[in-house]
Length: 303
Image 1: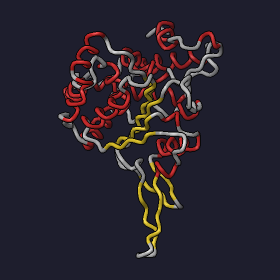
Image 2: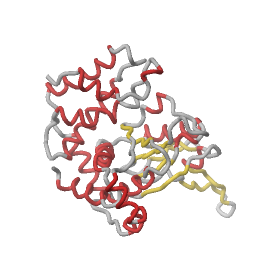
Image 3: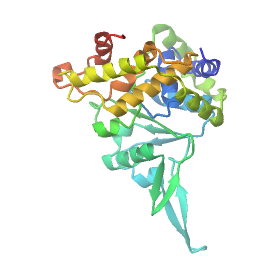
Image 4: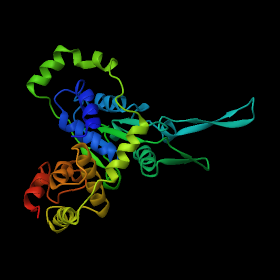
């Protein structure tokens, strides 16, 4: 195990109880320089997880509560005329930070969603003809309620693809829930949480993840997974080349966290559901809700 990432996870696990796997997925996504989408029911800990990740990584954090009346300028910023100076002064929006929590992103209108997702892709924004670069590192952790909830605008497939990974949190086990109830939700512990690393060290970890070796045999396995989804009649479309790159990058980050300098098949298998789940859409409504990622992994041999 990588000692630095283990310290990060140990600190976060003091607040996010019983969700080590979800924390590992979130950290792998960030090490792979990607954005994370968390989809679950209200009250499952989506927001506090984003707070905790930002705090232990020593990053600047801002939150935007998405609503139907939120406008793009509320996220990006706006220039305001200063009569004393006779000039326009730019007031940066909350997107100018290291970690932006886009809370309940699917409650905003498509126009506002698109403004954020464009920034996610480019890591810069052009406002009134001037291009402004966002701080580095920059990540979006977006949360959304299930599409069946009232007042939601589901993200289209092209915008879902901007998120490197999607995951849910799920209900806690009985022991973790009891500890949660006894500690009043762990909020008092959050105030005592201190950064484990800083932005500079995070950037070094990201570079180290990119250097993790990926063998030809491992690439064969990865391509076999992609090809299986493209040949399957169950899905409207198979995984794209960009999804293949996402899978490789996340597997490299997972291998780094495991303390290895090469990617193994189990690294690909660990991140595959998070990378592929929101990119695969079934043809038949009767197949919706099934765990196709696990079935694909069982169907494709390692070598």
